[in-house]
Image 1 (cartoon, one colour):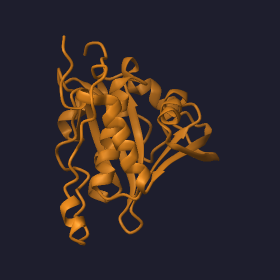
Image 2 (cartoon, rainbow, N blue to C red):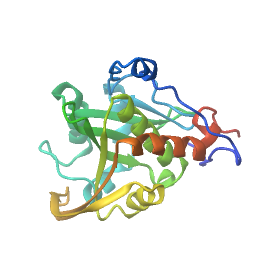
Image 3 (tube, one colour):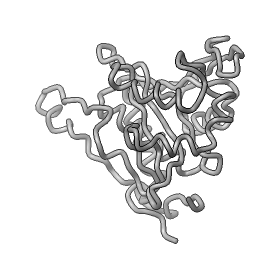
Image 4 (cartoon, one colour):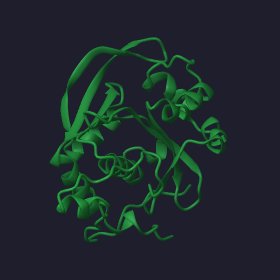
Length: 232
C-alpha cells in the first residue's frame, strides 16, 4: 500500500462545508446526515460502510492477533468473521455504523472503524472498534481517519463524541492526547477483552464547540492532503 506521507509543509487550511449552515443562519434546525452517507474520503483514505465485499479484506488483514489484545469480547465470538458479522449488523439494529478503511491510491483494505451507541435524543456518539495495519498507526492515515469520523459525527449533529479504549492501546491514547482531546478518566475493569481479561478503559471526549475547533485544527494541520492524493 506504499509509504505514508502527510500534506505539504506550509499548506493552508482546507475548509469543508457544513450543509446545514445556511439553514442554521435562518433560525432553522439543520438536518442531520446519516452515518452511512457517502463522501467520507480524503487524499489518503476512504471510509466505506461495511458490506459483504469488504469481508475478504478483513479476513486477509493482520487484525486477528490484535483482536485478542485490544478489542472487547462480542456475543458472537472472538473471531474476524464474527467481528465482521457483528459490525455489519450495527446499522440495521440502530446501534452504530461500521466502515472499511481503504487506501485512496490503491483501494487496498488497510483497516476498519465504527461508530457505536449513537443516541439521537442526547446527541452523543462513540468512536469504537478502530484498527489500522501496523505501518499506518499513529501516522497521517490515522489522523485522516479520526478527522473523517469527527466530521461525520458533527454532520450527524453530535454534541458529544467520545472514545473509550483499553489502557493497552498506548499509541491510540497518545494520539488523542497529542490532539488535545479531553481525557476524562479511567473506568476500572470496564470491559472484558477477547483474551478473557478484564481491562481498565480510558475515556476521551469532545463536546460542543470543541468539535468544530478540532476539525479546524486538523484541516490546518493536514492541509492539502485532505483533498489531494500524495505524489509519488
